[in-house]
Image (cartoon, rainbow, N blue to C red; front, side):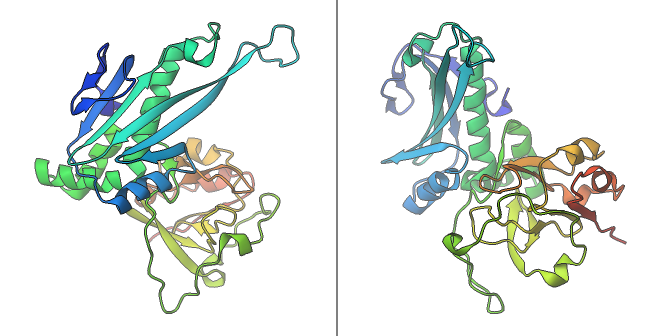
Length: 316
């Protein structure tokens, strides 16, 4: 269960809560108020646009909606007699203003027809809603605002505030580029290629990783992993079609990576975590070296990677 909503989930029969009336919220309602401000149109647009690759996003007036959809089947074989399937969903609503309210409701299963054969529907919907909320708070500009709030209100360091936020959002998925904002081009860099002009390969490129990539590839835009800046080389556009090599000394060529997962299992100190990379021809997930500084240079991940996409450069 997401620690973000611990002790802050209510079952409500009334449609009235906090600031007034939340339309249609007459069923089980998860409710959390964040002590941060979110009012600027550009900030709302950043949250909305930043999660388009992860969820179905919508925005109306001062509210942002993130919908997670999943499919349930009553049996594995779609050709079997009596086979049924149903598409289910849960929507998280972000109400912005002087404070931010994050709410969700779990409708009765009958909203989706008559799939009473679905097991643990409410439990799954609750889990997915909390996954959406954790992902929003870990990846968007709301993360920066929450970290700043913790630093000021609890008199703790930024590192401690980041750790606190991570502990509060254990279900979060890592979403690439979830804080869209203008980036100034450096004089010695070429302008970023338009996604439409980039030729995307049909699949993962063959390994092993080129250990001389730093001299052969151009340094590209860094990725912010909860306050830690991960360097990247050879990254083109924003579609994940060509991602290049990520990591300065825990280096992974994401265009070779096939998301085998061996590196996550082999690492004794938890350097990696999954993050979504929709549109990449090699795989839709990659191991993000978000704890790169914790690497002990044991080379375990490098040794278990099937396509040899990883290179560890020991720091003296």
